[in-house]
Length: 135
Image (cartoon, rainbow, N blue to C red):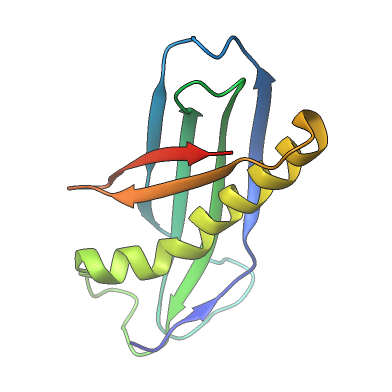
């Protein structure tokens, strides 16, 4: 599948120190929206992959939430044709966004907690993902 990717955009990232025994949250979703670029008439179908997340790993002293996205163009797809992506393609397209969440979290926890916290995301059915972390 031929694609052209725009830059990853961190629309929001919120970090809080919390009680490690606070409620565990593992909400990371992948959403797809049609994208229309009014400034340039590009060939092919354009979508925006959005990854909203809210995470508090088990026994971690922090919680994060936010929204990260990326515009992706499929030059071989006509703009008016419906785009059908299977689970493997969705995982491949969303992987850079998930990795960006992992990188930001590791770097921020390295600064605030004196050691980086590595999030480990495992795909589940549908558009949801689970996460576990290790320090």
